[in-house]
Length: 226
Image 1 (cartoon, rainbow, N blue to C red):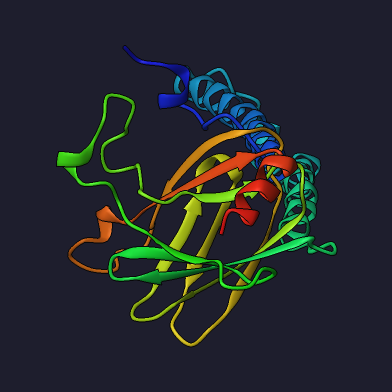
Image 2 (spheres, rainbow, N blue to C red):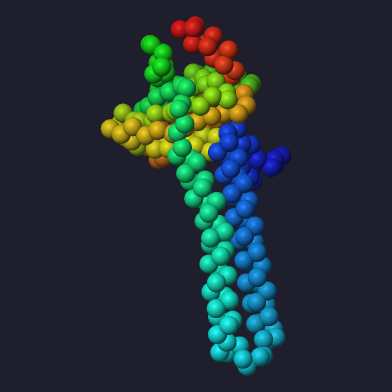
């Protein structure tokens, strides 16, 4: 059975993803207006309804169809640039987590807490349960507190990977010898799935990412359990 999320974006779980979806709808409306106008003019040309001889040399018309596309591009560019700056914004993160890509699994380090480090492997087919998602579930989820500003440091130990969570609107390359960073804040509790979106080798499709968002009290209890 086809659901809406199979033909559209996943439900947004972060403010950035909500803004990305709004911008997508905004750009689609502009594109629909452009396509509709072009189809209308093409249809009139094919049916020979434009028979005014003045259209062959009309300076005012040329000025109009040059200025209108310019304003359309501005209408798209302004929210696009605003969103681009929002995705790079880093406002005093409370928590820092390091995500390191390997062939072919992820490891996580909670740099604000001592000795909290673990690997995250995909659950093998023989160990799946009825509630598991094949090729998406892992043995150790990345635990984060919701409604908390965080910084994710991403790197790799071997080849280029890509840490991507569609429902959070986040995607960043994990490059050996380089430390990239992104900001992250999840608005609601739940499990959020992602995968390496860089072709990194033979088992590229077997290194999923699972983020588990919980309340701050539960997160502190999880931290204290180590």
